[in-house]
Image 1 (cartoon, helix red, strand yellow):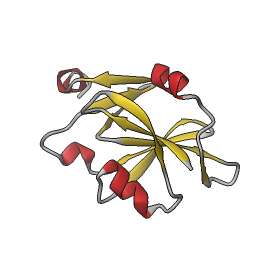
Image 2: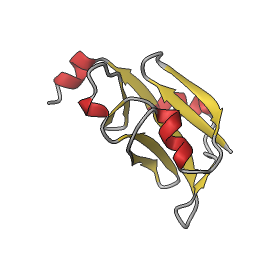
Image 3: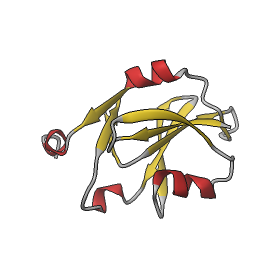
Image 4: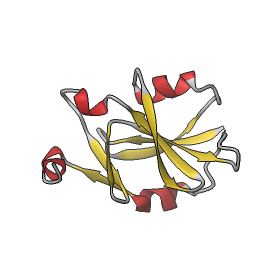
Length: 108
C-alpha cells in the first residue's frame, strides 16, 4: 500500500510502498520502538518512540506536535487498521514543517 515517508534530515516527504506488516514500520523509520501521532481522524504518523534519545536528530512539526526522526504517514479505517492515506502528497506537504533543534529547544 501507499504511504508517505517524512525525512527531516533531508527535509523531504516521499511516497513509499508499505507492505502492511507492522514490522516493516521499524525498518522504514529506523526505530526499535514506534509510537503513533494522529494528524486527524483518518491520518496517522508513526515515529521512533525513542527518537528524543538519539544524539544526532532532526525534527518535524505537525500541528502543535514536534516529532523526532523519520515519520511514516498512513491512513486509518473505522476499525483502526492501516490503509493508504487519503491525502495527496502536495496537501500533506502543507501540513508538515521541518524545525531545527534550536527551535525545538525554545519549547522545552
